[in-house]
Image (cartoon, rainbow, N blue to C red; front, side):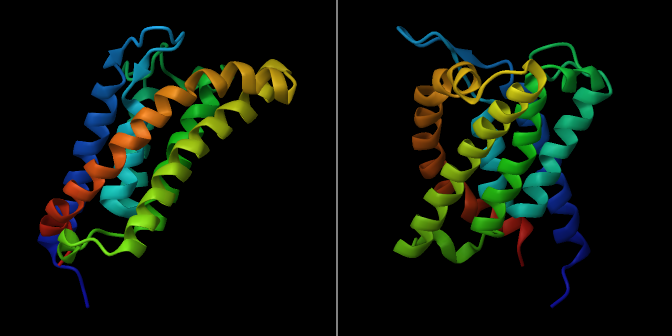
Length: 191
């Protein structure tokens, strides 16, 4: 079954809208008492792009976000451009793409019939979201080991452990958001 031009257009529009939401969420910072790293909502929107739009269009939204940063639009937490890949942040940026794509491939394109969620799909959604958050952190740690010539333990202590509490909070938020938004998105991006 071929996809209509209107549906294709809607998919690209949703990808662009998610790219904009990811960019804006980079600046939404919530300090948590007693935790050294504030809660930044960017990872949440990156994972949501995959769980709501599916693998291709979720990853496309992250590619648009990354491209904006690489050409110098201030969407990263540090000044953009290609030089961002010489910093530890480069690993997280690679992880953003991997996370969105993996979460989307696990969930697939949304369907209108998902208003009633079968238990198997709930497990897929949990696995997709968890995979997304883990891929971001693991990519960041691996890249940090490479860029800073750190041991795995040191890189994990600097680039993984401080983010666990915040990412668990975002993970818990991502599941009900995905469940609520997937059927809404399906009306526009899936025939």
